Length: 317
Image (cartoon, rainbow, N blue to C red; front, side, top):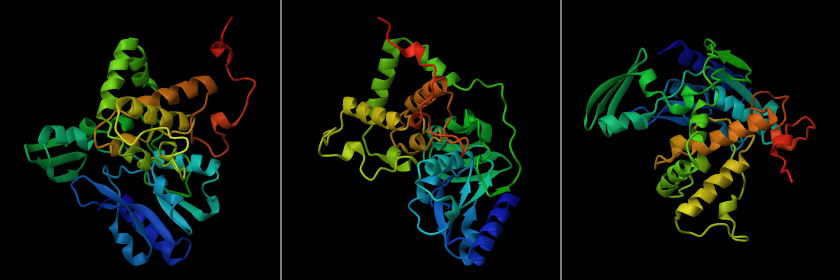
């Protein structure tokens, strides 16, 4: 057991024993290989179930508002950014929240492993190496080889808000272009982009797993569930799939923290993140805003500034 896990457990045990929180939201080992699952620890006797490793992929901020009482949460960088947005939108009470910050080196892309070895039967992680036994063969990977795409472009691996930090901080390289992946998509021709997203939307079965995994999709009634007006039919259609996904992107404009929870939750492997990343880039360029970076900041679309570079977007007669 590594020191961060022991520190998480000891911190959780102390918080619960002292009555400072009613529940600790963290991760425990899942029932499938390379799968951690969110867990809710209510007593000091339960803290030994808590873990921390490269399988802890869920954004736990999605569960905070739904959990009553005072709570502690184990938060990596993207989780903390989501918490900041939720606080800014008055979905959380800061005094009811204790944030246990842990820096994150990234999570494992299980789809990449599964594509090579088939269904994963057994797996272990030791010293940055992932050993996997699959239905179609066994293989050993370096973590860098199977690091999730979201984590490869992450610029905030350290929590931006926390009450306690466990472990060492991660130094972030400033040499990588912030939106190289979006620029590559923008450089494609219009027809190439259309064909790409037609292919992606054809895979979507509108199970709404992406919406349910998103910490910032908290509306009591989603627009796609409305009967009056009715936005979508009950069937699955490529055009309607795009309307749903584009609608989510617009609702997340200036709010998305690029945690990748939506893409990882998608059973069909739809490249949902491509749309979100494009919107994130546009908001950054138009409003110089990145979501969830500071408690003092305000959401880009909630404020007006005379200095917004709007001239380039005006229609010239």
